[in-house]
Structure formats: structure tokens, C-alpha cells
Amino acid sequence: MKINSFAGAALASALALAAGGALALDGGQLYMTKTCFSCHGKDAKTPIMPNYPKLAGQNAAYAAQQMKDIKSGARANGMTAAMKGVMHLVNDEEIDAIAQWLSTQ
Amino acid sequence: MNSSKIKHSLIATALAALVAAPAYSWNEGGGEQEEALHLKPDLENGLDVYEVCSACHLPEGWGTPDGTFPALAGQHAAVMIKQLSDIRAQNRDNPTMYPFALPQSIGDAQALADVVAYIEQLPMNPEPGRGPWGPGTPEFAKGEKLYKDNCVKCHGETGMGNKDKFYPRINGQHYNYMVRQFEWIRDGRRRNANPDMVKQIAGFSDDDMKQVINYVTHVPIPADQVAPSKDWLNPDFK
Image (cartoon, rainbow over all chains, first blue to last red; front, side, top):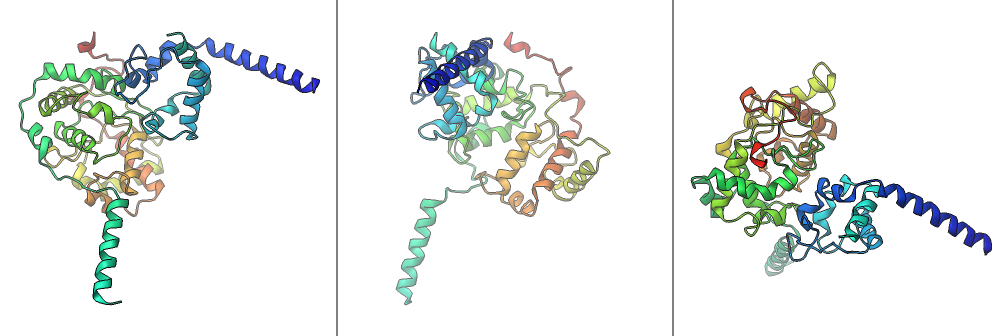
């Protein structure tokens, strides 16, 4: 049990390191160059369609998970078909950086 | 089975087909397509309208060489009017683009005429996304032969298409984009595909498809329609 929680802590720090690495990417710039803004608005709160979400201020972990699930197809409901077509443009690190940036808007 | 039973089962089959299969239609014409084709375009308004498109197709109208977004610069206005009208009418599935094509994003038939006229006169990318096989390779030669045997009649020797018949120009288009569309046309996913083309390419293998499109991406674009460099930036967006 102790070993497990130690492993858990090690994993958590590894993840934190990975997240730290992702922070080196400019999420705000990626948000523009990867065409996120085209649908969600330059300020991430004026989406082009009323059934597209505002993203500014969203929790980073939640936003990143939705992006990854839409990319993998694990999430395929709602308006995700519109987003799936561009998700090959970002990798996991870039997704994390974008999500982090969104959470600070 | 008596005749009334046969009739009923035929009706049931027809209804099921209606529900299950989306409508396929190449070019019904009419509506705002017809209207936009005959309006006098206003290039200045076209530039204003194009701003929303430029978010993905870029200010230069060159799309992305990886083929995520197609090049639009230099495309025949009539072809773009047809495709936009088809996307609006849900006759061509493009969930990513759909909201941008709607009247509330672009505007009415006049705005359609304006924006496509603006896009048509933009100079083209001298270095679009090209296929992997250059001249002199066997794959290039195979693609060239396939092109001459199958495509020239409609798309022309140099891929200029035919604006009067809504056949797109395909020279200068990105390789990955064309492969994707070709595959969708061949396999029945592009619902507004020309049935003559569907028939023409029905027997194409995946290799045939890649080789013929590879050839198209190496066809030279008329020099007077190409931007001075691949780093050209659209001055209208300064």
C-alpha cells in the first residue's frame, strides 16, 4: 500500500513535469494557429454558433480531456463532428498548453 | 406474393431507402446558386466577407499544404458558388465548415457572389502541398497516364477544369486534400459528386488514386496566376 502511494506520488510528479514542459508552449498562440479561434472566437467566449461552447475560464483538466476524447473519437456526440476534422493539427502537449491558456482567460 | 403485397414491400423498401440514405445530387441548380451566378460582384464587400473564411483558408486563400484546408485562390467563382450553396443546402457534408457557410456568417446571394469573386482573383501559392513522386519516377508516369486516360476530358490537360460546367480547377490544390475528396467521391461520401466522375473512377485502386493526384500536383500553374513567392502575404489584410 505504501509502495503504491509512493508510485502514485512519483507518477504525479512525472505528470507535473510533463505539464511543466507543456507550459513552455504558448497556448494562446496555438489557440490562434491551430484554428481554435475560428469557431470559438478570438477571446474564446464568442463562438460562431450558439451551440458551440465558450471556453474562456474553463478548467484546464476538463478542457484537455474533452479535446483528447474528441480527437480519439471516444467523445463523438453533439457538435464534435465539426471539431474532429481539425484535431489532427494538435498533439497532447499542445492540447495541454491550449487548455492551460483557456483556463486563464 | 400477390401484387398488392409486392407493391407494399416495394413502398416499404423505397421509404426505408429515403430514411436511411441521404440524398445524392450533383447539380440541381436554381435557388441562390442561380441567383449568385448572375449578380455583379463587389470586390470590396467580398474582402469584408472573406475575413471569416480567412480564419481557416488564410488571408492568402492558400489553405494549408497539409491539406486540412483546401486552397481557394484562383478557383473558378462558379465552382465556389456551387460548393458553398451545396454546403448551405446540406448537399455536401462538411461539419467543420458548415457554420461558416451559413447566411448569418457570410450573407445572402450577393455576398456569395462578392466573396467568390474576391477569392478567384487572389494569386496562387507557388508551392502547394505536392505528392511524393516527382517527374521521372514510375509512380509519376503511371499517374500521368491515368490522368490522360481518365481526367483530361473534364479537368483539361493542365487541370484548369471548366467553369461553365462547374468542374473545378485542380492544379495548385494540395495533395492530401485532393486524395481525401477523391476517395470520398469514389466511395460515395461526397453526396454532390458528379455521377460521371463517380463512374469514371469506380475502378481506381488506392494506388491509382494517389498516383493520379500526385501527377496533378506537379502540373504547372499558369505563371500570371501565381504569387511572386511562397512567402507572399495578402496586402489587403495589412
